[in-house]
Amino acid sequence: MSHSTDPDTSAAAAERAKRGKKIPAIQAAIVAILGEGPATARELHDEYTFQRTSNGWPSADLQDIRRRLTELKLDQKLVTDSGIRRNGEAVMRLAEEVAS
Image 1 (cartoon, one colour):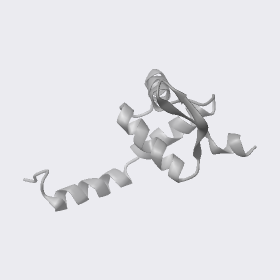
Image 2 (cartoon, helix red, strand yellow; image 1 turned 180 degrees about the vertical axis):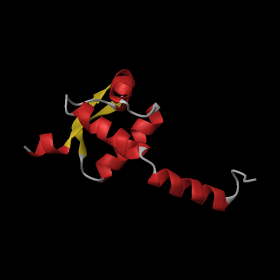
Image 3 (spheres, one colour; image 1 turned 90 degrees about the vertical axis):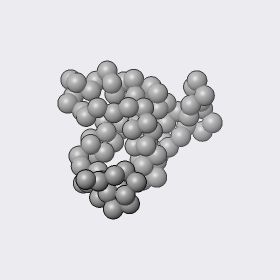
Image 4 (tube, one colour; image 1 turned 45 degrees about the vertical axis):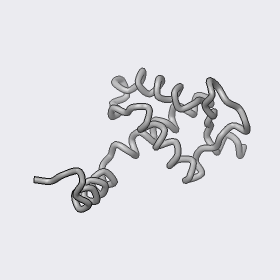
């Protein structure tokens, strides 16, 4: 039996999560949604939830979307609209849009 306080269990769970297909699927969905125009994390989550079933995407909560946004931004696939905020949240867009 494992416990959440066991570092070996936590490391094994993190490794399993990395191998999964959920993260790339959510990232691809975010990029697809942002292809329609810039959005905040909350707007992305709302649109993701709306399209999820019809596109076969895995379930994702707002925190999942925020994590994937951060990863995509670090991979330089997304950028923040310079100083633009909606409802207190930064507006994100595809980096290719900005480069062109």
